[in-house]
Length: 187
Image 1 (cartoon, one colour):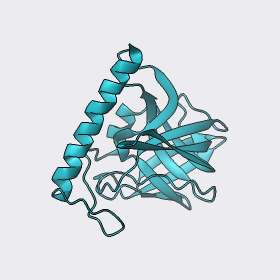
Image 2 (tube, one colour; image 1 turned 90 degrees about the vertical axis):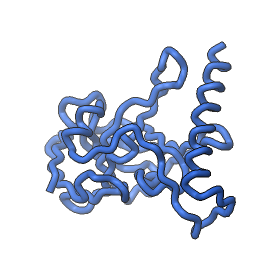
Image 3 (cartoon, one colour; image 1 turned 120 degrees about the vertical axis):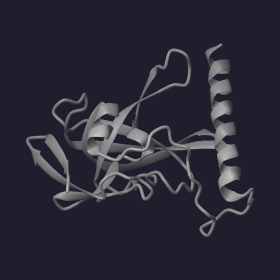
Image 4 (cartoon, one colour; image 1 turned 60 degrees about the vertical axis):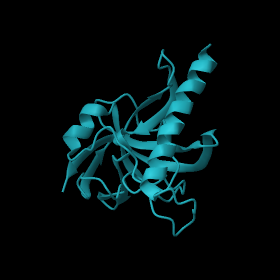
């Protein structure tokens, strides 16, 4: 029964993404590097760090371990990237030193963060929340999602550069860390 409900939920989500894809590309079947990027229909567009904080359970600075995999159905793929938390906001559930898995939709989307680069030489600031199943019990999966698929910055020195090209969030942020505790502010 749970499997049937999950399949119906996944099928409905896949159908919505297909309709969005066809609408965004003008039914162009061609794909590849030169294909137009699609715009994902987002529930919320965020403009401030405060708005992200309301929706997130955690704010982390994390470094990929080099491990990444793809999950999902053929028409609805997700990249799952493993990261080690370098520092975290004091009021979150995730702590420095923990491993986390971030789940992101795979596709050529113009308004969300690209799939995280699994290169261990890259670090990110991410506003995250637990990803739950589509089933009625919304069970926690052990994975996180980036809030709004927009709240992620690539770390550059003592700051970060927004990874989501179509977002209204601050393009640059300032980062401070002390004993595994993270503080983020808009520049």
